Image (cartoon, rainbow, N blue to C red; front, side):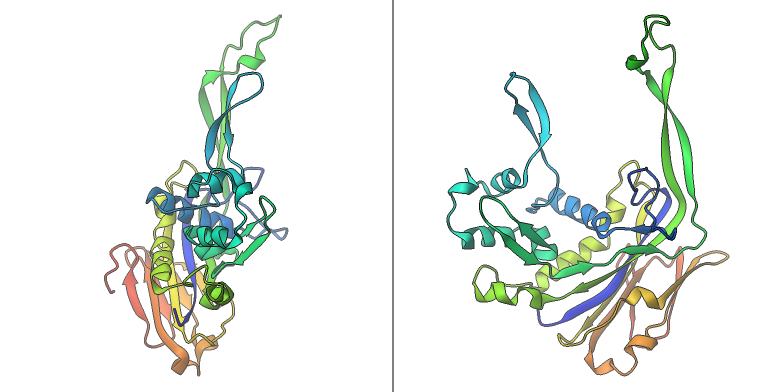
Length: 314
């Protein structure tokens, strides 16, 4: 793949919790800005790839493990165990060929895109990812967390006492969501990150097919990942700028503004500020959005607008 790609991806969160901190509230900076980590965006992509039968290394998987007492417990696999499971290897410690491990790692779709740190069985392998995400900051200024009380159908057996006997009532829980938030994640695709590994002949490099797989998944995985806390989170925007391989652009989320209109959300993108005079080095610019819910204002010419759901040109 002889090009770079820059852009950003938008996720809306309506009465949902896109990325919680350890208190259960939507993640915020020390200054109070709501944001989502890059891991929050990557995980639904990994889960979607795994569900489609792709090899995904860096994702939690479970196994049944008997302990010394004969009890069988459900525990997560270690990285070594996950590698052995994924690539049908009996014992990684018996492998003395690092090139074989590298070839296997590059056959995992998450490693091919996001890179890997693999320090197992005496090996210390670092693969910088071709695809790099920044943190996804919420661009909607009126976001507020909402706390809901949830009634459990079960009593808490640990509350049984000698004086009062068994607990008489079922327990209460809490669900925390954002009323509305709109996260925008900057990203860059740099195929040159794997040039050294191509020379070692352990990978063919990052191909156009790899990029298209990343692009398609990045536009749908948040919507597809419909867990209890994520139901209400949807892919709402995508900007993809394909450029010559030697053009270097800054974080593009600094050039957007999100507003609530009377009937639709309004996303304004000032690309002229950063792309003006670079037209000869830009191959294509595509913007994906839902015209039913969103209006997009972009000041740059030659942009192709597509419906994020139907993929038809708008």
